Image (cartoon, rainbow, N blue to C red):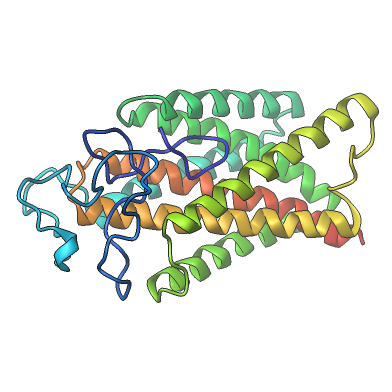
Length: 290
């Protein structure tokens, strides 16, 4: 099970009989038609472009023919992805507003965040997307975000609104960059993002341990100038996750992934947007404190 998020695993859409193969699909428009991953596919043996896992008779990309989703019912479309993402994000927003309005205690918010994490991990290790798990994750994640958003609002008045606007701006910017091919999501990009994400999460874990046992801000990476740098890196990582999500969605539609995979796409987008929002909150709070 491969991941484009350092916390929760997500399956790639271009899978073959050898297992899960993230980003083994067609190159983006304008990219060379030759196989960019030949001889180095870490997830599946043989030519990763040899078979369309969702439709028989796909033309070989090695001959320059772009794959086309089969004209069959039950296949994922962009409308499916948009509608499912709208549902999950809608649940997150409604739950966050409810938690804010009800003055949900900090402890309850933390508990909700832990439940959301567990549900996310359960979904990550499921063979297929489970809408109930994804919506449950969105519900508890929303409760958690509502609690921390209100806390950050006390530290920096208006920080949640600024974080929402910032998250929307990052989403739009990454989408434009991806569609215009300013961002090329290939195997090298995936490796770089994953390496950076693992390093970032490990650094946060070490900082949390130092903070828990030593008090204060741990290593001091969440305050001052260093905190600003770390916050910017966190936002950039979130933007990279979005690019990976867009690539997976594009591949899923192109290869005719089952419609149920649109729930997985919505799950991935929600994870990335939540990541960006929380990093934005921290960054704005630090900037207002300086």
